[in-house]
Image (cartoon, rainbow, N blue to C red; front, side, top):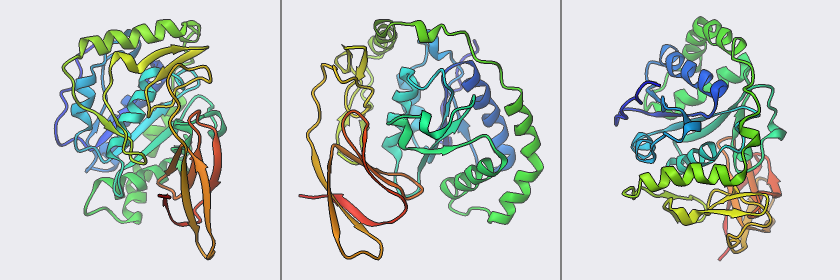
Amino acid sequence: MGASAKPRATYNIFLSWSGIRSKWIAETFREWLPLTLQACKPWMSAKDIEKGTRSLQEIAKALQGVRFGISFLTPENLTEPWILYEAGALTRNVDDKSRLYTVLLGGLQSPDVKPPLGILQHTRPTKADMLSLVQSINLAISDDPLTEKQVETVFEQFWSRLQERLHSMPVAEEEVDAKRSPDDMIAEILEIVRSEKAITTNVVWPTTGVRFVPTESNFIPGGSGYTFGEPFWAQTENSLAPSPSKKTFFIKLKNNPTIQMVEGNYAIEDPAGTLVVFNSSGVTIRRFDKSVERWGEAK
């Protein structure tokens, strides 16, 4: 494996991957995006995530100044620890101008992706969806974005290159990772955490204000799986981690004077304007599609 690129303050897009197929497309996007949008400066780790060589400090530095994040999902990496970790870390930068999307590969459909990744904005490997993704990137990373027509023109010029790579993506890896026990996956993460004791970079979960610093205590074996400490939700019902307290959220819908009150542990509004309230296990309690005027936690 080659050495990872050294993160610079000028990077504005973070590409998250895990596994051969996911990495294949992430590398493609790293080369293809700057051709389509010159303002794009993508960053991705060049190290093999499965061998536990990705550096937490490296990721933390790369996230500085990032305005857009893309997680490349395949059926075989949906529950991989680092996909979940990086998605959580990326939320630190989510604000009115930054965005976090997924690209669904290998036949994945939106219903296949469960929270926390399931609440993100999904992109299918189709021409229409990819154009929409590029339009969103254009608006997120530039203070002087191109017009929609300009983006469409450049996209048409370079779409065939991306399409060819999407069609030539490697076949699924052997089911090696699926056979790993939860303890094996925990050990993999602990090895990385132990090697990065000096890291103090933390993640703020935007809806709760919870501040999270990765430590060994955040990786607790539980039941049939493993758990990350809040706010990563990779929890099982039998997890030893304490459940976060319930909250009451108020929701004011457009053209409706009634304010609704909904109980749940978390509420997230995605870039498309969809609001989802769900519990600590990631189960959706209520969903409001692009109809919310304002919302917040009731005090």
